[in-house]
Image 1 (cartoon, rainbow, N blue to C red):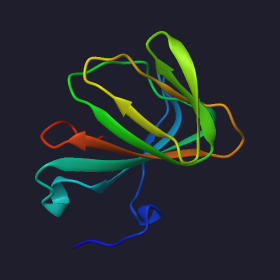
Image 2 (image 1 turned 120 degrees about the vertical axis):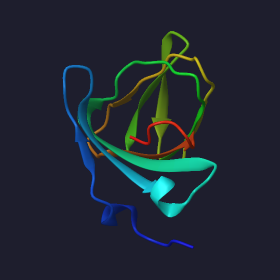
Image 3 (image 1 turned 90 degrees about the horizontal axis):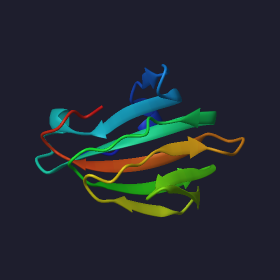
Image 4 (image 1 turned 90 degrees about the vertical axis):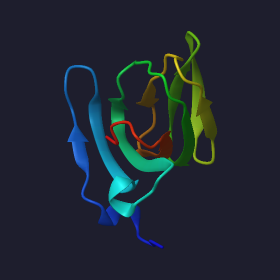
Amino acid sequence: MKVIQYTDVEPTRIDNDIAKGINGRVVIGKADQANNFCMRVFEIEANGYTPKHTHGWEHEIFVHQGSGQVFNQGKWDDIVAGSIVFIPGEEEHQFKNTGTLPLVFACLIPSGIPEL
């Protein structure tokens, strides 16, 4: 068993031409001998965003803090703390922070793909 605060995990900073103001943490993954899923926690700064992208695996997302939008089938949907987002495989998606607080969300992905 593992019980931690997500902030105890050192973040990986992502800030480049296609993504802005992101700290990503693998909080449960291969190192924990998690055989089925990887859990990551992302913090997106105000005005930050993830890259718009697609891939073969699904995402399950729980928004913990903040407010923002998710790109969903050609339009932007609002998300706030407590929102749940399911993204099927091969569906284009992107997250952006539209608020003043960090947008913090947990994201599950299948094991066997790059964790971060």
